[in-house]
Length: 520
Image (spheres, rainbow, N blue to C red):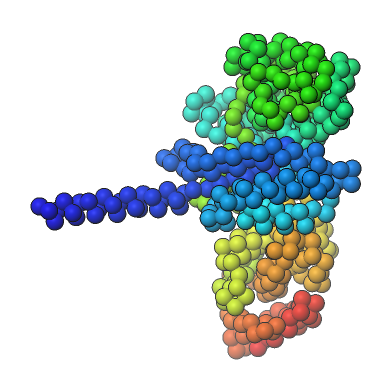
């Protein structure tokens, strides 16, 4: 009996240990480097529900430290890096693929920000991806609306408004699908700096700030009003801060109404000075930017004709978590973006698959020698193969350059600027001159990887130039110092003279990459 009890206890300990391991395995984190505040969220997925393990927020006010030259002041850099050091202490034990860090409006506007981003990545211990305004809007919508359909019905159309420190995202969608997405340069920090920089609040200034906010969204008013929505949802600290003030005054319960908004504006004007803003329910770090934020909110209510708005405590960081969980479970939205682009631009799928198959065959043989991360390398080669001919939509001549331009400037859901830059570089470098200047535009940490993948990709493209159906290339590749050796089955190249000639030309091109190509 004692043995049975001990055995049962051991099994329980084993199961508990396995359970703990599973919990650790699903732990993920998101960091939102906003223009007003930095947010960190650590969570795990438990039976389809998001379980928050840790949450940190610091008011860094990065946008306030961005000068006319679009460079950060030393004080702003110091505040930001100190915050990221603290975040980094919590996140360093997590694997790189389980943490997603994004920079938004201020980091998008930053001039020559490579040195700051490198210092920020070192402080945090994780890579930072700067995302476009449209990608930020998509992630905000996903964060706010995730799981709502089961509670409120999938057919409701939603307007989601997120007023940040340097930009405002406005999205209309139905269910999980965002249909209209815009990011405009409106934010509580920049609007406060523009209209209340000396701390004075007057009726005339508030009227001007409110009108300026409406002018900023004028270009989207008609489209958004025509699309319509069943419910308006406000996210972010600005909207939630305004709602708490209204609730504290007894002017609002669960909704921000136009009447409550007007009363809050009037109360802010009567305060007269930013330093006198001390409203019940308003966090202390929100007071310096409240005047600009409430003016932006009023301008949006005016422009879109909003009469009432619900609020949400979820925003970009939750959207990042859900997106990251999708990547970890083979639901990477980036793959869907690539597939949609391939379909839209009429890519020859069979040819793309042939190039990809050969590129991955080459990768398998050189990954160890070149010390390549197989997961990242495979993903980049897959995307590049699927979109290698996207530039043909413009012209055959220079199609690789046209493709690079499209991929650098397209709105690609799920992609950071670095993702897009690397993909665009591979498409550009698939043939012709090996332009080292293209590599230099990639963040330094990724240059060596892209340079090596470009060599693999170029060879795969050359080998399939003839578009021979079902072609399986019988070759082995080896790397020796700076020499790339291709060893074909005897007599194979004699049957494909065009390929032999292309490889001779390619050998000259690869000299610019510091490589010698030998064909056997």
